[in-house]
Length: 66
Image (cartoon, rainbow, N blue to C red; front, side):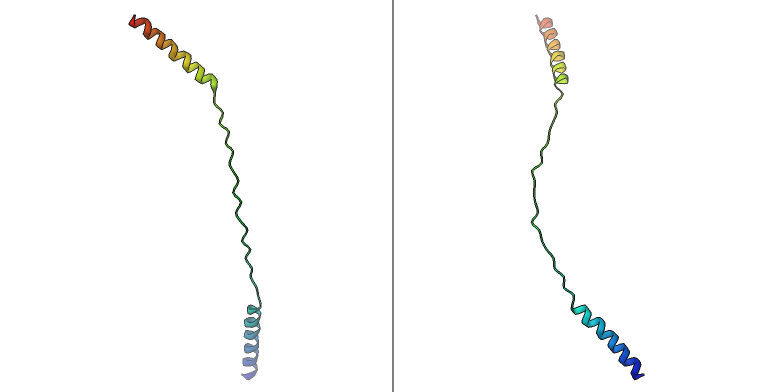
């Protein structure tokens, strides 16, 4: 009984003392914020076609009013 008690005690002590020896370090690096570049392509052909369409409607409206 005493032999197993000594063995268990030594076994527990090995785990307890090895657990106290470990070191943990955390390094916090600064967060880098970069600008975001957004490119927006505008379809000019559609805009021009819509302008031509509405100009035709306005011209027809002007002719009706006269």
